[in-house]
Length: 206
Image 1 (cartoon, rainbow, N blue to C red):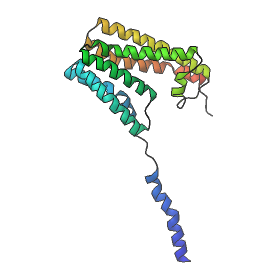
Image 2: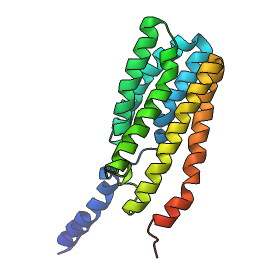
Image 3: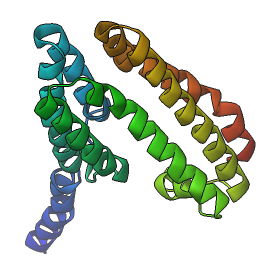
Image 4: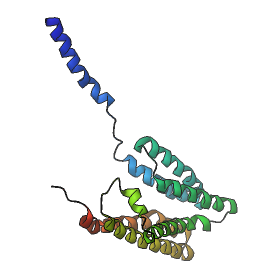
């Protein structure tokens, strides 16, 4: 009887000792921002060291690496990253082949314009593409998704116009600073500004 009780106690304790090892570990909090902004930071550093063409090559290399890191640490690659990869390779390739920095400067214009056009087409045809991208993270009625989609269309179109204004009228260094800090700062402010809209449509918890 004593041996049986000891065996039962051992069996009961065994799952507790193995549970921590079998549970999946969440990625560190700094990994996701590093993956999202690693390419941009690398572009800026490479520009400071070797100029616009070195920065272009660096971005073309680091962006696919960031996608591989997203697959490994986050478990998935966002659809937006695949779309951006195509534009990066095309515009970057033209920049290097023709030795014309115009193409890499227009990349931001092309990406923002295409995203705005796609979202607008979906909005006009009753397909909320932005909802399909973000629905796993946010739950809102379609009215809220339409409003947020409209706001993003305006923002993307505006930033495409600002990018054109800057690269056509100012130095490459000023454009790089805008791409690295100005654009991301504007995106951060715009995202925070959506809080009142989200608060209106997001369901409240008890």
